[in-house]
Length: 509
Ligand SMILES: NC(=O)c1ccc[n+]([C@@H]2O[C@H](COP(=O)([O-])OP(=O)(O)OC[C@H]3O[C@@H](n4cnc5c(N)ncnc54)[C@H](O)[C@@H]3O)[C@@H](O)[C@H]2O)c1
Image 1 (tube, rainbow, N blue to C red):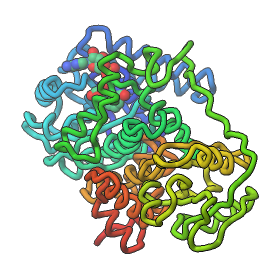
Image 2: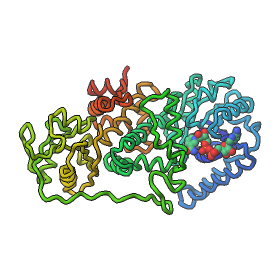
Image 3: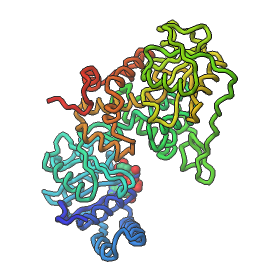
Image 4: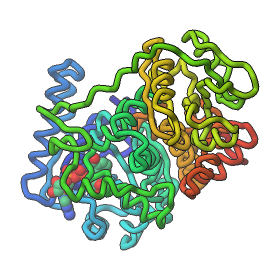
């Protein structure tokens, strides 16, 4: 609970659905008197009861005292008319996501409230400039984007429209902190920070799926075990449901005028059309029985009689640790510049596919496999190896068994420039870098918004720094050459910092 008086003593929530209730709850907890208004008669009263029920649960768990329960409850006032909002200092709009409805509401609000009252929209996808276009005084209007469920998702994007005054944003930033949330400042651009930065994870996973490199469950397993994501991209889509997530993908792609980095995939369009939306309907990428996700068993490593000698490319990523790993597994390692006629040839490229490396290094492709070592082996719970279209079955099985010798999980995938992890992480970091290049927000706010708003294991720029900006740059340049796709072109922010060998957090003065 805030000790100082709240920045806005009287706050109105217009639209008292899921978001309105959550925002009203934390607003009242911060010390504000909160007016609840909804155009459906009786909805504000129901919202008040629902918010009080939340506080009752907190009281039962001893997270708040009875005194606080009574204090907070007394701060909620329901109203059936906008004209009763004349004394409020801040109006937070959380009505349906429709531009014309929001514009009409703000025109009415402008005449109902005082000249100093700040007006904000909780829109997740509409432009602040467009919502405020009909206002006589748009300088006091901004975006204030909370996430669901509001009391638990402790971040809010403060969005400055072209005409919003800095003072308006400063006040909103102060108030966000008083409500116990981390404010991040964004310019008025499609997806703001969080929904923009979140484009990489899912769209790249869908591309990997579209190319039949492996099944979607493998992609989920790899990204959770190698990068520490709590949910795989397909689990995440099942949770948010395709009627939300596919539409967000399309909306941001089109708002950025078909920018290749955000290109959606036909897979989700078809599933949306077929009603296979996700967990809420019991069927998504996964099936759900009694609300429990059903997964298939992973193939076990094959038993093999005899290991051939192993040769490792001189250009392999993390070559010394790869050689040590193979020694620990009991492999006999060939040290000559070229492999013998029996050897299993192991390559570990960044961004290139196994086929390209086998050809460039004049290796026998039927005996060549790749391993993804962008991330140090000791930091991951899974190894990923890739074949190429010419790899012999026995070599594939030997490689699978060999890299599973210490009991670590191994996924074997088809050839892919950048395997799975490299492609996904490079895409995430690249999009984050371009958000900074476009000055949508600061590097610090970007990392905070993504960790708090998307629950990533670290901010994308921190991840890029940990893995090496030069490695991410190399991965993207090679992905671009393998696929010939502009999607992988490095952002100038990354290109320059990667080439200079400096942190991705480094701003230019
Ligand atoms: N649900 C989310 O995960 C989420 C997250 C971030 C932002 N948002 C945004 O928050 C806003 C609200 O979303 P929600 O999920 O709470 O919606 P919701 O459907 O749960 O609630 C919307 C409420 O607004 C009321 N309403 C509609 N038109 C109105 C009007 N003209 N005047 C007054 N009340 C009106 C409805 O009766 C309803 O009670 C949307 O702009 C949405 O994009 C939603």
